Amino acid sequence: MINWEKIAREAQAKAGNAAKDAQERARVVAEARLKEAQERIREAQDAATQNARKRAEEAQELARRAAETMPRGMLVRLMSFVFGIPILPLAVFMVGTGQYAGLPFTFAVAVCATIGLFEYFRGLRFRGYAPIDAPAYVAVVLLQFAAWSVARNHLINFVPVVLAVSTLGMTIYAILRKNREPLVNISLTVFGVVYVGWLFSYLVFLRSLPGVVSIPLPFGNHFPEAARGAWMVIYVFAVTWGADAGAYFTGIRFGKRPLAPQLSPKKTVEGAVGGIVSATVLSVLVGTWFGLPWIHCLILGPILGVLGEVGDLAESALKRDLGIKDFGGILPGHGGVLDRFDSLLFSAPVAYYYLVFVVPRLP
Image (cartoon, rainbow, N blue to C red; front, top):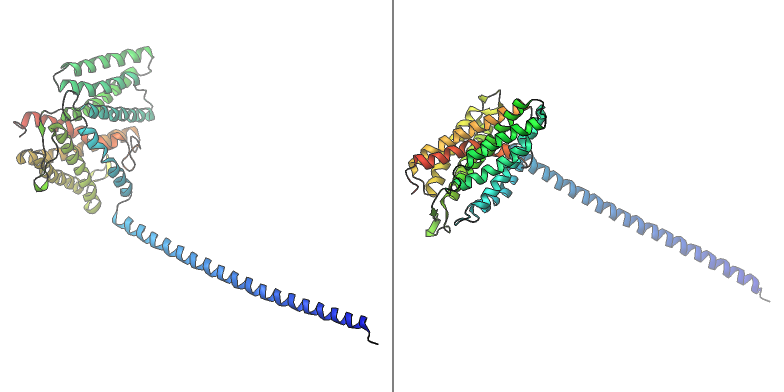
């Protein structure tokens, strides 16, 4: 008789062995597949790492080439200048003619002058002085609107009134506040009002020059009619800042002999010459395009170039005396308002008086 129990045990044993063999084969296959997947992941990671390293090396190479061809900080300066370009014409040409012509530009100049005075006062406090704030801020703002009014034959005595009242106000304010060094602090404050407020106001005077013109474009077209004074503001900005840029790049490339090492060690004679040449070229190109006689453009260009250099050196002297590098940092790559407008503070008044008294008439 067949032993069924023995047969069943043998079948169970075979089934168990078969299951173990199947599990082992499955484990081996799974391990192989896992290793294959891990290998592919590593290959993908290696490829991604190599690609990222290659991109980083390319970026570093581009940065290195840019650094070799562009002076340090120039990219920031250029970006700040490019993004600031649209603001200037908008302020200059807004409300071009009529009763309130130039009023938005006057507001803009008043804001710049106020920021400039704040930067100047901050420099004074860094040195330990105590400027007379409140009357000075009022005077600087009023000077801009005084220029706007005087240029239209309104309130013709407004400017001396502002200067007289502000001087009295600062003196009284200093006495009431028991300023420790009233003579020194009042003198420094009055200088700030004149240096920042009054010199800034000549941009408003320039904007208020009479006349309306339509500047030609290539192929027979013209810009829309606009105030002549607005174009003269653009002209002075272009020549003065063009001189600044020309001096900077010429000094970087060819500069060897220091111009004024005690005031500004980086400025060179070669850079100054390059700035004057740039100012002259831009004066002729831009000035004649805007309708100024070429002979006056040829004379006024180098004058503005020299005055821009003097204004820059004058501010360098102030900063060196106060022990600061820049008056501010509101303009990336350029410093503060006074650091950017220092040349214009000297060139704008002379440009205004030249256009009014030397040029017989603006054609």
